[in-house]
Amino acid sequence: MAQSVEWRLEPEVRLARVLTAGVQAVMELNGAERADCDRLQLAVEGVFIYICQVLREARVSDAVCAGMEMFGNQARVWLEHMGPKGDLDHFFEPDSMDRIKRTSFEALGLFLSREMSDSLVCERRYDYHKGKKVSRFTISKRFARA
Image 1 (cartoon, helix red, strand yellow):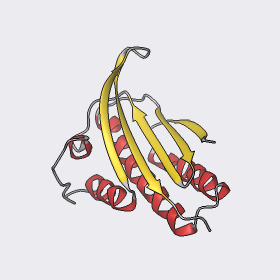
Image 2 (cartoon, rainbow, N blue to C red):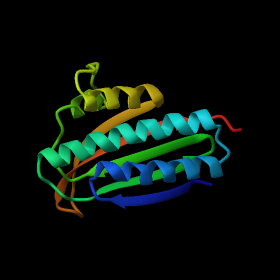
Image 3 (cartoon, helix red, strand yellow):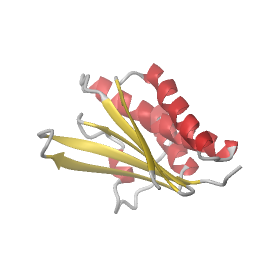
Image 4 (cartoon, helix red, strand yellow):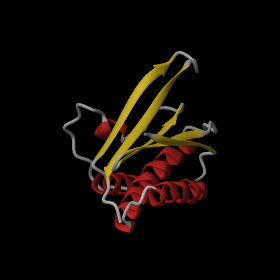
């Protein structure tokens, strides 16, 4: 049976601790090894900080919505926002062949996020319910049980 949890956070870097603590708790409840918990937390933190930076630069104060789903030994975390497309988003689009370069703090965070996860994808779509474009980052990570 799949488990899921959702968060709604203001785009403030200091709130990354709230999100990563929740990710850790869900992973531990599902018996994940500590190393896998740490990798997923680092991946989520890097993406969240990047989104906060994108929203801050655009002067957008909309909340960041995040969710986590567990399927057997696979965790999937998504983070989405209704701000503008970020400068680094294209590196994580489904068909992108571009490799991200570690040229800034945000780029390094996203580079590490990709390295710590099995998959990191960014998709931008129009949400008819919200009446706006939404950017969604999805992080997937398989884990071993402790």
